Length: 78
Length: 376
Image 1: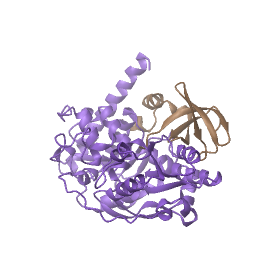
Image 2: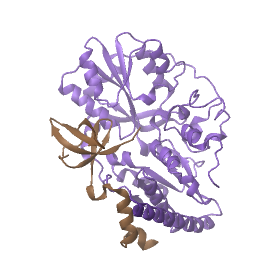
Image 3: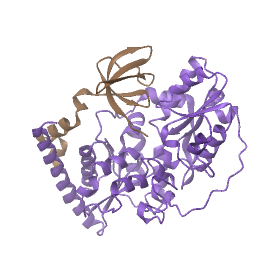
Image 4: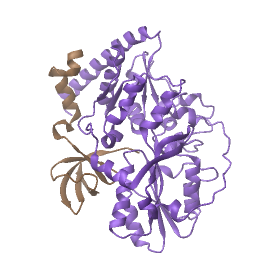
């Protein structure tokens, strides 16, 4: 039930944001995330934007790969 | 993902698994040869672990067990009986997430009532109920407000939106539940043998990480806030094994892309404006102090139990051999239940853990292919 997906905000009006998820657009409420801005990725759950997804971390695999290469914490212990 | 990324991902997964194997074996030796046992408390994790084939990848020294992470599954029969009683009224439209439809109450289910003509509508968002209420001013529209901390703010915001828009025929039948109190109760039972928690990523989006500090402080157990991709789950398992092997107990955040230490303050503020904590019943675990949410007095005109109280007789719960309660607490695996895969299958579910697609039994049934051998 706690399923949530990241989607890109393409417009905001009256506490409602239009988001794009792989080409599919729908309106979600920004009542729980008033700071959402056009161009950001947000995590969407049950018709509400819940959190801004930080863009540099949005692609999980890349972040993990960077950690393997870059001497961050996990690598340090490996 | 291009070929070189795939290769790197595979390499990363292999590295993580070899570290998980090495560290868990060290820890296992020190605790008398018992495999490390990690619990996930989110139905989406339960499914993601199966879908990613994580169990097949893990060594015998690591065991994964599902806790009470499926909101539909932990919802008590009493609640379903109330929802059904409201749905049977001619002046009521019930709106709900789809996964509540087949959950059995003591006598019927919403799905049965819908077949008999009750007006029950599946919604994607609680907000959709507002439109339905506006279109049907002569009906009482009741949203079945079920779910953990992720979902509770969406229902709370819907109440605020209804108030702002002067919609007076929308109500909540509230049974929201909170994750930290149930973990506290589970760990206070000596039957629960868990070495650490895969913490629910999307619950933590709202709560933040601090609410789970008690796992480390009170029970000296590690917890890692975890995303839902296979690599993220493996990385959390690696962190859990690392902590156990090094006798550490910390709450770590491996889902930092969306989970902030403080959570979502706006969602928490809206949630506590509309709801207050209250004692509530969980399936198989009884009443747990301050583990649920009831509506604040200020919003009692949106609380259907206040507006239209029911006098339900305490229905006798049908006794079956269903062991859902124990499955929910991670005390047994689904196949230890005599009904599992025989009388109880997704098409004819007896217990809620088989009803919900996120239920532990449904996931074991779907991904186990009837064999339940995970490459070991």
